[in-house]
Length: 142
Image (tube, rainbow, N blue to C red; front, side, top):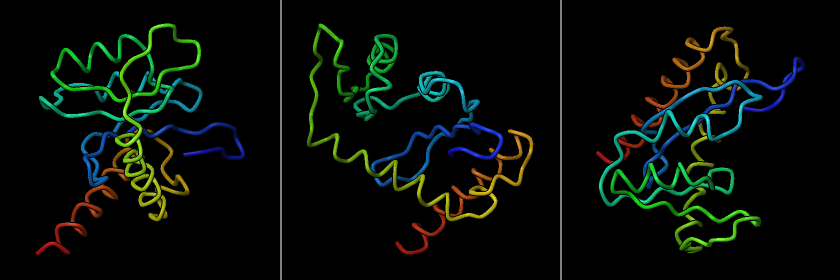
């Protein structure tokens, strides 16, 4: 979630649907690379789904894992990549929904200030915040 007085904090990794509602959540240490969190989230993907990711996720094994599950990866290629993959800028614009999700969970004080000292407790607070986000959306639809 950012920096604290002690240095890097815990990274929150999320997989959301097209509306920005959380489906899967994972935590990694702040100094770990983003692809470590991707390994935990890329299981049980739906056939035909499209996963949007930034350049940090432009790794061959991530693309292969997504494709073996019947999904499609829409990840921009790194500048150093020689073989270019298909990429849709129009679809990539929808990635703002994940950024909106992170902005929403930062409105919950216990998540934003990291009161919880243990990772399991912090993840539980993030899941509670996610449940409240789901409830708000479903309440407004009824």
